[in-house]
Length: 122
Image (cartoon, rainbow, N blue to C red; front, side, top):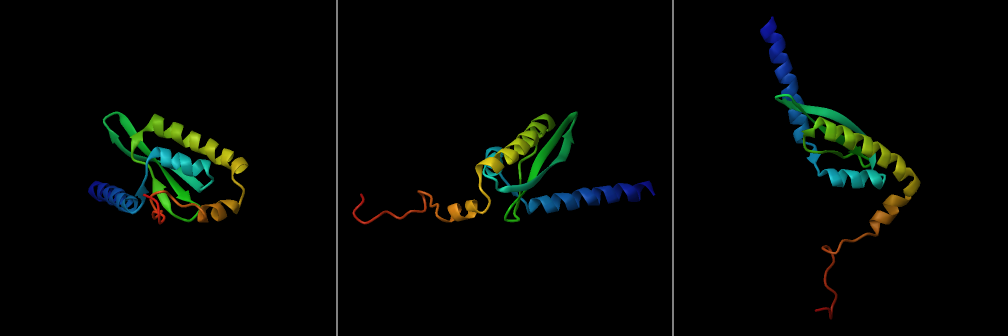
């Protein structure tokens, strides 16, 4: 019976890893930017693995458009500080971003890389 329980635990970890492969990994600074601009709906702190005595964790977030993103695995104290910081940014963004305005503003934004050169510009 012990062997069956052990195999079930391994299957559960493998399933969780497969689910996380479908989630886009982003840099911590990008996630902070999303939180400051009010684009993050919810986020969680989850463990990745243990390397000896070091606990590795990551932050997983759900954006307002339904997309899920996550950071790479990092040491737990760093991930916990990031989680607290993101909560503060999320609360701060409520005073910065007006509901509904962010989508309207984002439609009009173009990036320099996307612009085609105008005629007559060298």
